[in-house]
Image (cartoon, rainbow, N blue to C red):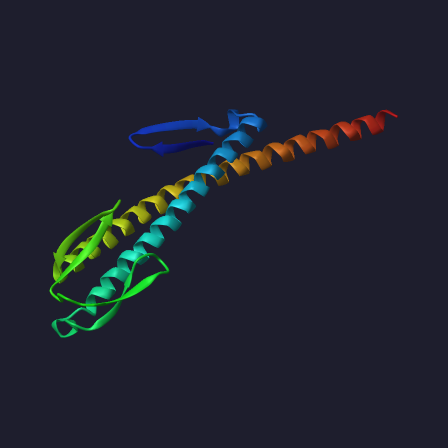
Length: 166
């Protein structure tokens, strides 16, 4: 049984039936670690996707009528201060690593829409890679199980042969 693992442009082929039990175990552990990294990455991207989506939804509430209205301005994730909307046509958005830009409301909506689409695309790529790694992991486990069953069968046969000698 041959399994191909794609990473970037190069393909590594491993004949699982030629690996010993220890090598199969190490390969399975490596695949488990990679799958955990994929899960962590997906979780992080899901949080980012949700934040971008919530930011876009918040912009829907800013209209010309909101000028001068009171709002709570987030300073941190859990601390807010009272404020008033001074300009309902422009917003300042956090673009990461401490950088902020001023955009009109429609430009900001477009920015968050693009960010949601980008993050969603990255999530789909990671999910696809995760499915491929999971298939390889399952194949490794099948070979390991077959090896263990063969080893167990051989031990049983040896025990029967010894029992018939006595």
